[in-house]
Length: 206
Ligand code: HEC
Image (tube, helix red, strand yellow):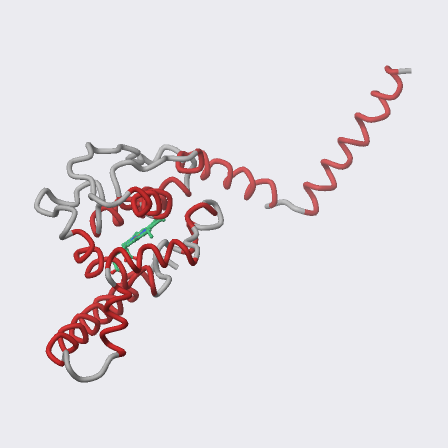
């Protein structure tokens, strides 16, 4: 019984193969080529290293926790390299983001010169704009890292800690503090300019 059914199957399978070959002479070749290409791509060398933490940013625990889950994979030397970061082509893209992210901003190399008092102001100057505008964390990172989505509470905590809420109040207030207000406006403009040019450079990624 087994024997006959297998005898039945073999010729019809062969026929199907012949039919396929006639219908899709290139289909198989393209598929094989894609598989070879995919395998070859895995040979592309990708750097998964985490350099030493030199001067981790000094911040209160709650702030640090937010930065750790939303930013540290790309902006620190403590990147968690997940499984897909070992499979090309994702590996190549992830490694590039980490490399560029670290170059631009590295919470593990924040600098010895910044203590707990200076840090919020530096964070305000360097980081707040990109968070508030929603540019950071990068959108395509979020579906795979839902824990990195910044909630309203996270944003409030960051805003208060770095003094951005103070800035907004100052800007809203009239008169008395004219000089300080002027300074803030200049800061804002500089940040916006920087942001604009950054957007352009990140355009080619999409
Ligand atoms: C998936 C990786 C990734 C995550 C997560 C991420 N960044 Fe970035 N970030 C980048 C890359 C890549 C660049 C450099 C290229 C660019 O500007 O698009 C960058 C640039 C920046 C810059 C400088 C450029 C600018 O727009 O002014 C700041 C500031 C920044 N990130 C802050 C943050 C903060 C704060 C977080 C967490 C809330 C965060 N990033 C999360 C990848 C990431």
